[in-house]
Length: 246
Image 1 (spheres, rainbow, N blue to C red):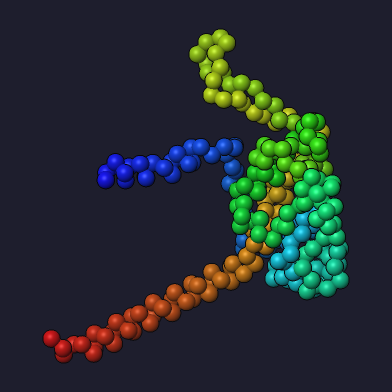
Image 2: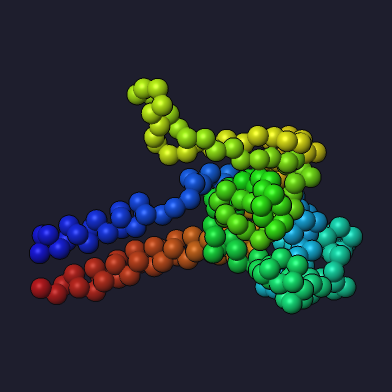
């Protein structure tokens, strides 16, 4: 039995060790930062919504981010007439398959399915690859069909790979390949500004997955407080009722 318990405890460690891919950077998102969410919504509409839809997100939910109906209409609505419409695209699934080899997925729940750290690292890990169909590749998602739609902001980079030296002697290598970025052409943003733009975009993608998350947490805290008060009252009533019972 002890041996079985040890094996079962060791299985999750094996699963983690077998995972491939680079380490993910922590996404510095804040779902309470309305300015960040507004900036992320603008980036999503300008760079993502031309190919990716968000069928479960309506334009009028953007008003929860502190935007007015007029601001949503004038700045964030390019493919719909009513703020009650969902964020869909004109490109059909067949067109997506013909152009990219696979239809671009809906991004309504990508923040929940992939996670903020994965998205944050993925959007900062594109590089030029002439062997791919689109001319782009990604360190986190190798051979991805999606090109780097943010390349004008980030610039053009390549990923250089070299064998790591163990330091033991001449010609000795080990520790796996070392990878580093080489900037081929600058973008309109510096590295810090681009990371901030990606942070805002990921913040909005996570928000789309559950727009009412913050209000639900606030309601949950109130409910727990009320239950705590009721527990104290119920315990006091029980003590008063049974005090003469032996």
